[in-house]
Length: 324
Length: 230
Image (cartoon, rainbow over all chains, first blue to last red; front, side, top):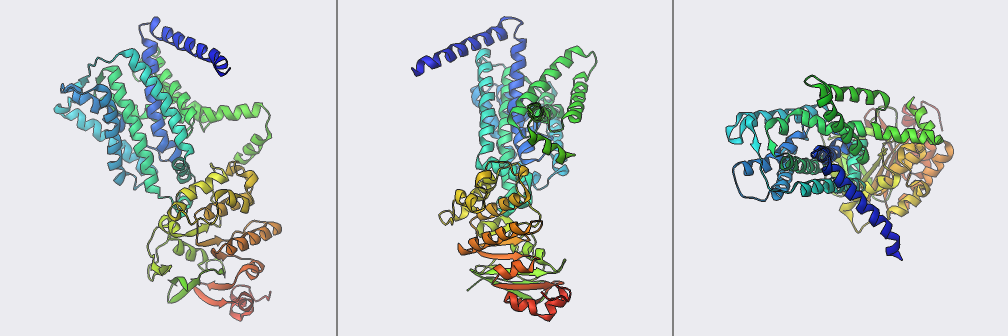
């Protein structure tokens, strides 16, 4: 009985997966496949950023550092021809990024607000310059990361990881630790009064977020096969990571998924459609301005509000009054 | 048996005993909230010491003190607005309350019942009314498993009936064996629930003792009640 009920869903699911595969790999030389992988990787990283930026409310401008550490933890051993499993390296990269975040949290999380933002930005700049200037770290020429991983396998794994991370972050933010994140964001002084150690709470958000950014960075290298200081540590990577949550809805899990998809889509479209350098940055800036003018909390909360309004709930009206 | 004693401002010794309800009154700027901030560890006194349960706690941080059993409600409500009342209490239970596991006087459900938030426990706090926000703060403080609770003008901005409800709630909390210190402007409130009252004026204690006796003290009437007799 139960099996019979489930069967249509299973068949539908299999058809959907088959259609997805055909769509991705059948037609245009894997362009769409690459695009979806990049979206998934940035979603993983953005969810990590969102833990600190969205849930704890401490805006970081330097999460590319953790992305880059993950990337180079994969890139350097392969560049030096060490025989280590690439997938193992990707997870090691996440761990190294988390460890680095834990160490750097000691000075960095002593400050908050604007000084923290500047500090994280500075961290990114330092890392890029160090890697550019070090021939032993392959300097500007970067590392070609040849690996024999099956691209279909990698694509599937990254897609599944993206879903696991998204569901995991949602799960975490409903747990005690996640509630503490939000408590620290809402009223830090009251959070302290109920026994929350603000510094430890922020460190937890930074370290978990760094793990996710490092994981995304390592997988990015495995998929793209190349890493250099610009693709690892440049501030545009940090901006790509934080732009998704901002546009989709900061502090929301689904908003991050939507926002990041839109950001990467626009970046890719602008790169080919706008005939001048930096066109994609301009397009993103324009998008951000429009979103901030239309719905400051981001697209996802904005749409949810609109849906409530259209369905004619009075609750929303009182909210608007308050805002006015 | 003293569980706390402190030197406040200059040359002042103030101690609160267990299982009693204390009231603190005083004119604006007399140092009532400063006193709370010192007890909670928000401020570290420049001179003198703070003792709690016989141990010196001077200079400890608020999160350390709340883990030892000091709960506090703010004058201006500060609930975690994006969380529900139940989640507000959960944060406290999993943080400060975690350090006194097994000594809980009430479960989170009982706290919701006690503070009258049972039906609203799953509504986001920012959408609640002011009395319910204050209840949320009390629920959050209770979830810390406090041995002593500090209430900073909880009647501020409430109607008469709501104030009576707050007094009932405080009596119930006291019946559970939790010591209470309240800052309050309403003399009736103090007379009703407090065992002892301390009157602050310009950073010093001008009177203390039984509420009805203190209310007759000429110094208090002059400084605080502006010459009018209650």
